[in-house]
Length: 79
Image (cartoon, rainbow, N blue to C red; front, side):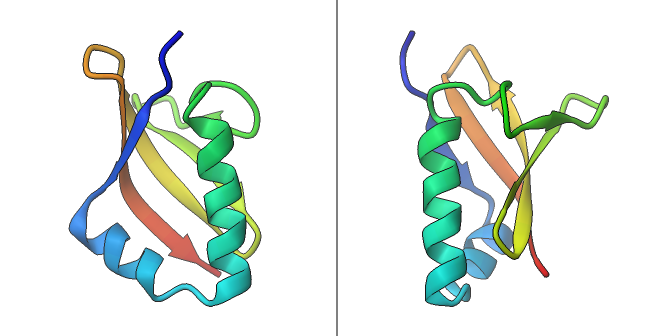
């Protein structure tokens, strides 16, 4: 199975760049897990074709394109 690419929509990308170091490191660790299986733990289905996964101090919401092997992050929330 191929690894997925991750793309962030503009708003989520801006929020990602604003994360402090520890949160950014946690998000990067999450990304490394999701690229190999965006549907398994720690992901949770939102029942509307989107998925969510938490990292320390926040979570992302994303949609997966199996055809293009891409994870499109549509929102990032830092708590």
